[in-house]
Length: 589
Image 1 (cartoon, rainbow, N blue to C red):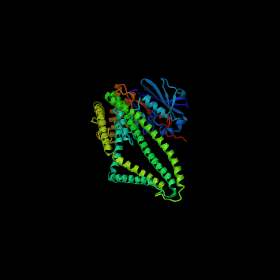
Image 2: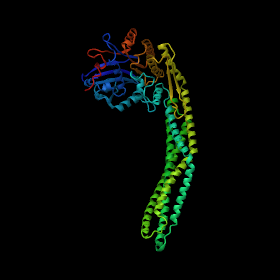
Image 3: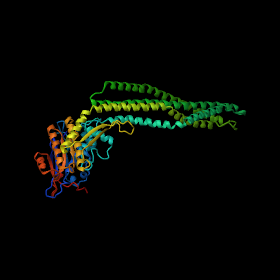
Image 4: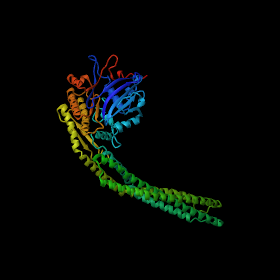
């Protein structure tokens, strides 16, 4: 992608108020000048120009722009002319409608908004992500990469990473810019999360160790009590003239008790069928997660090994068969048991009416124990038994759980070894990257630098397993100027490497305020070297902002004569020579 030109148009005046063409490759300096001696060069619009480019590339409208009264009064429209795969495209933003973006795929610029395709912010960003930078679902989005490609003067140079960023995500974004594999940590984390779940399960199991004997004794005691209740109900006798009614009452009660037990048992069986279905579906989902490995292999080594593909396919087909056949069988059994429960409950209701009728004829209570209360007591015992059996069953899974933990740990090791092999296969590329950085340090300071990449191979749950750690160092980097230079050279390394490897989707880098603190001679040597490299490659753009005092006069003259200074801004009585032609901090009322 090439950034060709920034255009500012006023709908109020019906004319273009500014045009800033850029060098198609090489250095682009946005300079802050002064009209009179002693006049300040800051606050003339350099950063505002960078913010505007950033806004056109999908960032939210900067606060200093969205709050400007004059931007709206002048009805300003900004457009960025870019070239993507030899196709000319214009990206537009209208400050009266800051939440939307505009796209014009044409060689000729039009200021009739009806000629443009208007997109809401999300669709505008998606267009930039997909059609401008060709980023896929398995790569970071441009919204995530943008802050590393367009570094701002406030927080962009505190380190090679940015403050308050998720470390895993940041490692992925920087790895992408260096064309290093990005998904290692995420792949292994899926297995580690499963391992954590199983470890937590084992902790619960181990906590039952001291009470398992007591639980088994309690189970035995509950079963005995339930048996006693059954015997009491079975042996109920009625005396006197009501013996016939009592006999019928007793018969109905026995049947009632039998049906209730059957319902309890069918409920329990039903739960087991449902658990079996869930277990099969969970295993199938786990297998299907392996589908992500094929694009991963294609991205890294260009093909998907047949052996892995065959094994994955066979395992997936097996579990799909199990879900389809055994799952349907279990569903059929669930429906069958639910129907049986329904029929038994209907019979239970009829028996309740008969029991109620025959119990009402008793004028005396010769029953040994109230049968209703006995059944209620039995229900409570059944609930206690279910809980106790659940704990005992869980404890009996101890060996299986330990085996599962061992299996998952081995899986992590196998996955890590595979990642390590891929990473080791990148040694030559990583060496090239280190050499580019070292060359930049040598050009600026005549010294050696260090840029290394290391795969985290720790396998503990708290380790960032699979994350690629970046070490970037230069001498005396504690000083602000050298620290800023280190960040500049770090970014320039990935830019030059991408140019060298012909990675065409991201071929520009913008540094705003990065050269305010470094030594003027070191930074000029650096940017001259980078400019030469990009010109020789005939590809890649490096944008920087600078004040007139930050560059030696002779070097400034050379840059100006060779067309490297693409924009000059300064203060004045009417502010016309600022970017956009007025002071931005004129806020809306």
